[in-house]
Length: 244
Image 1 (cartoon, rainbow, N blue to C red):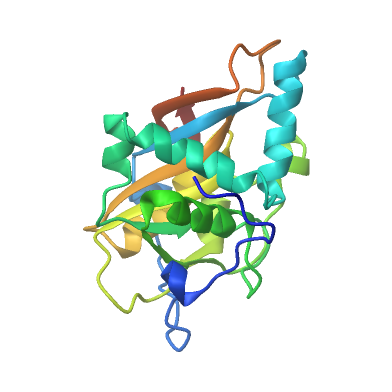
Image 2: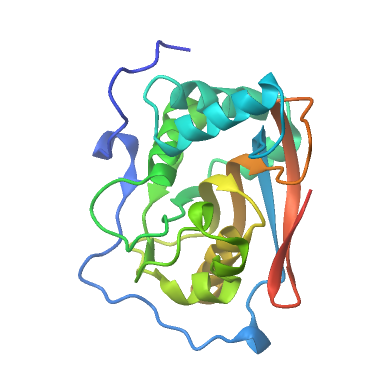
């Protein structure tokens, strides 16, 4: 793999970033929990993060999470490269990143603007290390929600609140297969809500998820930092449930 760039990845036409049609209004939907458009979402992840465990591996996982969230220009391409190398030998990962898929970065908690966010920079890094997939920024945050990472458990946004805050912009070309890209998955509320919003507006699209890191919040220690897996996030009684 070529040496990591010393400057943060920025959107460019060369990287095949496909912006939404800015002149078009976002889709609106009256979906409620009784007509939830998606019962589950398959996802893949590559690394473990533990906010509470002790030991050097747990400390390394926290450093990894900080680097990804800050879009560290030295480390982010390395982590993306690890995902790409694993896809060469893992059939499930290879199927997830099929050549006809489009990367859709999941917006952060803030209202969507012009500034690139962590998931967009991760999508750019993934595309550049070998996946070479188009990036579509058609999923937007209409208004800000509480940031889950710094909020008490009871104050974190629900799946429905995330869903209501999202909008899908009109695509200029057909979208048949989507890989939602996020930096970290905890319970999976954000990813499930993003997938449900896309499914409501693109009912015939294949929607799957990829989060580089998955949280292990209630363990005392971790045995591996790199632990690729494929799992599922389910819509369960009004909330999200992640397995594993």
